[in-house]
Image (cartoon, rainbow, N blue to C red):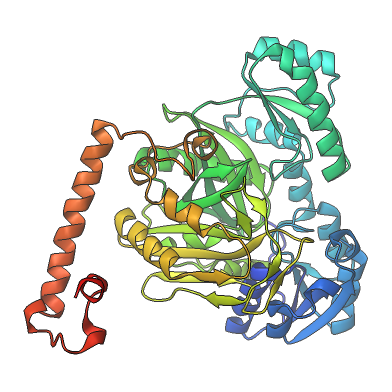
Length: 509
């Protein structure tokens, strides 16, 4: 669908969000010469996004429902400061069609898809039916609104295991895996309560549970001139309680043929709802590389930096370009990513205590730098992590020529990353990146919950995994020898100068 293509001038953008994503959008706006407006609650008065923006407007108490989720306060702040547009970031109001429509009604540009697309893809069942008409494969399931007895009868036809899912849900809320018929009534009751509490809608539906599945998503961009492209896939299977922890691009599981077929599917799904701007098609892929549409996220994703690093595309800039009515910079889909990127979400939580959230003041913060290392964050030394919002401290993203180099850089960066004053999950990431299964790319979306432990070593690797590790170690050693020969002969060092000694030499001298 081709929409109105008249170009619109944007001189000031209000960011209806907080934390690292607000900082990320502010930086893109600064690169484009666009003024920015931050909004903040009482708890965020001294936050980094407030300091970085050109202007800042207070919007209410710490509770999100009284500040970041209060549409009238956000729009009033935009009108008060003369903003032309609003960027919603992710979370909060980013996938609320009524907010997108309210912005349009007030003459503000919503930097995201049209309200109609958000509405269509926000309802899980409506989204399934829409993409099915476009020939997109979906997981077998039911429609929302059925009574419990109807759902139980449908489960018998679909076959166990099944997944109970909230119709208006996301982020793991209102989701329950059920392996036996007798467990289904209780799971339905719990899922309905969770969904009602989180989304104000207790409707649920059923999907066939695809076991040993990969969670793979495709980044979509579409402009108002009828152009829709994908920017390749992201591997998002390392997750816990349906919350992603590590993402990478490309996926070690996806080959060229699968990438082509899934990319074409993602474009069809986006076009089926008249999509414009940045969005993500999320899929489940089984061990035989059969893929199924899961949902569409009608916003920028937390993990968007890995796609940026392997494509060279600034997704936030593209969002703004598209919202202005211009043609996007890309002319075709990205089928050959350049290098490899991995993102670790650094959260304030204790991986040794069931990932219990941690609050407190960051007394020391030293972030890693160097080639191929990027840190997206909204915190600083002295910043206080509060219980009001999500636990993310930062996103650590590393790029390499290949997966091996990206993993090694991530290990180095995690070792350099120093956070003191509260618990964090850096030890989890360090253990994960030493796991044979992760290094061999042999994992699925249940790996962390079912086969990974912070306190015990992984089971002995298989012959295939040992061979993979041996090859990787040989290549790594060969690369280091080449680099050492290019830089300096070890025997020519002046070992009396302490700073030139390696770590091993300093310890064992």
